[in-house]
Image (tube, rainbow, N blue to C red):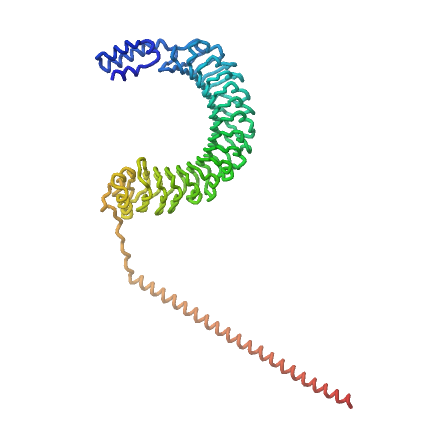
Length: 564
């Protein structure tokens, strides 16, 4: 107990002021915990004199406010130093005292710098992290960061820069992370990152870049593995822009204005594993662009304006493990597109317009572990919808419009440690139709399991069960309102119906009789006209025969005269 109390006061200045023998003596004394705590407070007060004016020292860190120059020295044991609201210039001689040799982290926030001189930090021989956050820097010499071989992290966020000039980072050969973020408008010059041969993480978010057309800006970044470009109003990128980043594994384009992506845009990114395209107005899955990414494992298309996904959308990236499709305008679950994704482990589809999960929608996704449909429009899940999901650990169906579930819906799931099914904030109707689901689920999973896995299933209707947990409802209470028999027709209704039938029959008979009479009349007229035509033809034939006979007789008479 006493050891714990004393270690609460284990600050650098106290360690130097209190000998080991004194601490050992305190531990052997039979004093109360309150006395030990009081002793610690007194030690803290007495150690305040070791910290500089307008500074706070906690363990190995010191924070100083409103300084107008770099202190000539710092207390021994300090490894992390932060200046807040300072106003000064920095020259290499400012860190010449031996007390700065052990400093491994130096930060400046909301400071005003008149000048950061050449080789300003060359004396910090143990520095690993250098941070400039929300500052105003009038002049930054091009070689200000030269000759700092130990530095591994450099953060330059919101510092009023408008340009990244070539050669600025030539002295940071061992730098592994560079954050250059939150500048109003940044122009990146060719070869701006030359010299960063070991850089692995580069963040250029919130710089209003608008377009990237010069592939030479990445020169020298042979080891880069992660590139972050969110919130830059990017509307276009050049073809083969990233062809020199052969080691790149993560590329983040979140919240830009990209509309079209082709295979040429991502040429050379053969090792890319994660592509983040969320909040870009793409409208479709960029199938052609994905063809350039044979090793892609994670694709994020959160709020990308998708209204449909074709069956072949993911055929070029069959090894996907994570697919994020949240907040899109999808109306129909793209089951055909999922069939090729046999390696998929995480699928999230929050806040879509999908209303139905059809039967066997995920039958090929045998490796799927996490499936989310939260905050959507689901109102129906068909029988066997989750068939094949034998590896599923978490299923989130919360905040939809579901009222009931098929009785054997969750039978394909294998319950293991960590299995969770979210069903909260739906419109569950605990009537007689829900009893089948309750009975079947109890029988299959057991009492303890259903209370652990389905614990947030709360009835909304009928009114007498509203707010009750499904598993607390007695079996006899799963009822449906009795069906009200249809009332017999009155005499008046019967007479109206009979009259309507008879009237309809009469009308049909009249129409039919008139039609038959008209048909017969037309047929008789046609026959008379036909006979008349035949008679005319016969008369013409007789006339022709008579003329022919007379002509023959006349010919014979003429012949006789000739002979005579």
